[in-house]
Each structure stands twice: as structure tokens, then as C-alpha cells.
Length: 247
Image 1 (cartoon, rainbow, N blue to C red):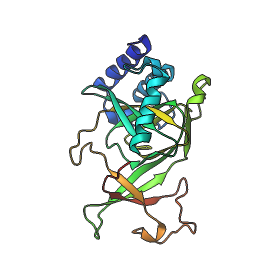
Image 2 (image 1 turned 180 degrees about the vertical axis):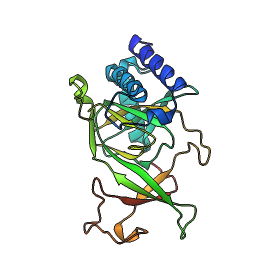
Image 3 (image 1 turned 45 degrees about the vertical axis):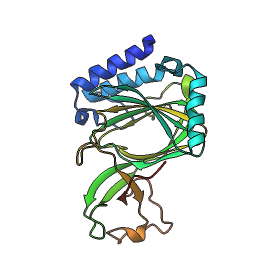
Image 4 (image 1 turned 180 degrees about the horizontal axis):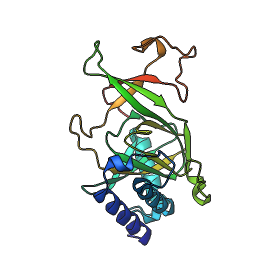
């Protein structure tokens, strides 16, 4: 493994083995001065330096192309688990142009996403409250606040991240900010994710949930509607939990 990979794993292991996700779940994409924010900042610096050649078993662009070709052949997003520890998992996701990962969450988890190839749109929401769904008790309703859509682009590899702006290469999804999100590939795209702690598939713990965004006429509270049936940044909307889709 390369020195850059070893350094990234060292920082991640040190951070996530000694810091709770609640401490890390602050500041969204902006890094400030608290201990949790400093940990995220260190990891982002390591991730920024990472290249496909640094990742174990990834032998440059040919293997990235192979992962994308598998996704194209199967018609589904392809994923490869790179590293698994009790504290975090590292996973590669291969999304051909037009493919996407639908709205889902990472309960009580911190996720750092580094784009390695291509361009992708990231749409995120903050979870506010959960409401019992009398029509379908197994699919609760979730009130959300949308955040500004973002574009992640690997071509920004050599640009400098601005202190007061989101990093164009990296997205930070915390337990409280950006946690419900979807990703759409605008070009053939490869993403590298660090999930901490990893999913445990235990109900009410860290199992993944999928959602659909409700239109205004479906909201449990209908006093405020957007006439264009969209949820505007900064306003609130509602989602319904759904069965995991095939993607």
C-alpha cells in the first residue's frame, strides 16, 4: 500500500477509534475549530491527496474502467469493499453516467465521500423529525430540510479548497447534517466512501433506510404548499420511508 493510503488509514483509525460520531457530527462541509471538526479536517486533507493508484487492488484507470463496465453490464451501481474495520469501512462505488444512488440515510454515522473520477450531483437533506404514518405504520414519515445541491468533480483535483466554501472533491455527511442524500452521476463516476462506524443492519441502530420525497398534497401538514411541487432550499418538506429499491 502507498504511503498516502497508509496515512489516510492511520488518521481514520485514530479518529474513529477514539471519537464518537456525535462529536464528529458537526459543521457539515465546513471545518471549524472543535475537536470533531479538526478530525474531519485531517481526514479531508488525507483524502484530497488520495489517487486511484493509492487504493489497494486498484491498478490505475484500467481497474476503474473495469468497475464501471461491470455496472454498465449489470445495469446496477457496482460497489467494492476496500477496507473493513470495527470502526470504519472504505468502499468504492462505480456509477456510469445517468446512474444514481437514491435517497437514503446513514443513521448515527459520519460519511466522507471523495470523488476519484467523473462528475456527480449530490442532493442532501437534514432530518428534523419522524412522524407515525397511520396509513402505513411500517413506512414512517420524516420531516426534512433540503440543503443546497452540490457538484463533485474529479477535475478539481488540482484546485485549492476555499475555507468558506464546500470542498469540490469531498462531501462530509454527519449524523445531523446532510445525512439523507442521493447521488446522480453526470459522467462516468467513481466514488470512495469512508463510513464510520459502519452499518450494523440492526433496527433502530445503524441500518440503512430509503426514502421518497413527498409532494405537497401528501404532506401531513398542508397549510404551506409550494405551487411548483418542489422543496426549496431552507424550507421544510416530508419524505416517506420505502422498501429498498434496486439500483
